[in-house]
Length: 460
Length: 103
Image 1 (cartoon, each protein chain N blue to C red):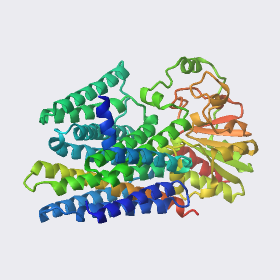
Image 2: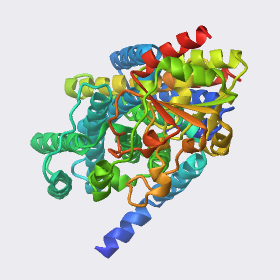
Image 3: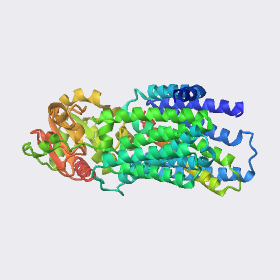
Image 4: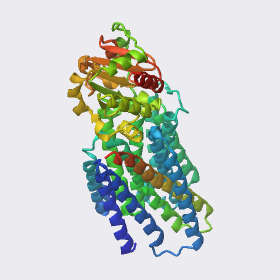
């Protein structure tokens, strides 16, 4: 490898670390993304043009066509996608990366099979790439609603584990025999693809962000493995960075949802005795309200805190809520948003959605900053959030969400909760907040209910 | 068996160093990130994992122009890889742009 290309890879690697670092602070995030993108561009063009291979022009043309096609499609998808669809988009892109890794492995399989160390890397690359590809596509389907049902095969944990162990044993067999057989190659590929489906299919939609983050991390590992094969530093370091950062991000998400990685993968939520007991217990009566009553309550308030949740994202109500907030502010009411770390469809997603509808950045308060302020709030408006405001996290040790950090909404003077129905949240547990004497329920689709609130307030 | 393991480690010492140190860098860089930025960060990291495209390009560069199977697979791998990279960085930029104009 030429020294020039090595230097380019070195620069690209540094931009990746720098980019990730800068992505971690609101002020520098945008430049961090651009720095990493520039480094990536450098690595790609360096790879194409700096080498001492005799490459026919036709191959350059093909590479050029592939890059143009991929860039145009990627760009079109990226600028057209709605912000509420972000989780499935990340999942889809991630699946493409995984597929790319698996395809590379398929081409290299026949050339490396006689060297057991190289064969081990390439076979791991094929299997991991295939798992991330099919797994990401299933996650994408689940999030965009085309795959609705949660498929629960009996004993699926055991089946899944036996399946992956089977793949590993078979891979070991292929490596030791060292025979270049297409049957082996396609069986390994098929094994990875099937496992990816089996792995993601039983996991519930609300846990999907954790799964996507995990699969993202796996794609990084697949890239790193391919880097080992080519002894290519930018792929190795870039892949490992994504792999380890992805694991940390996955764990952070689990923590914010009070879940362990194991319980996400093996799905134990809402099945325990606590969930059933909670559902049978009578918690009192609920009080339902109308848009006009809720509007009057807010009209005479001094401090209003809005708690947006998953339901707001689903109903695409982020623009209406901003309208409501502006109207209240115009009336001299002090309005703030309380953002739970996992509000929306994935951590940080609510911030993106509200930013999209032009909500002032300084009106969004994170959980630790807003919690002491609920005491002074006259009205709290909870829109499509459930588990993140469930007091059971504080006071019911038998609850599956016990110990999860929540927004202390119950400390406010009045609470208005907008929800479509009385169905429990994704954790499948009752929320005693809804039965609180200070709480009134405003039933209906978030967008419709907020639009009603806005028009009522307009007339006051 | 033991000797083989020692040999494996000593032959690949450089790579093992890189893997271990990069893992720590990845963890340290991400460790104290505010939840606000989790979504853009995941999307940005996802774009970075598209670095696998470098391997896809190498496959094509090393292909015999007569080897249609390798060329086709390599071609698809480049398309998918660049889709991941370009789409990923573009959408991350779009998200962060929304944060920025509020400042």
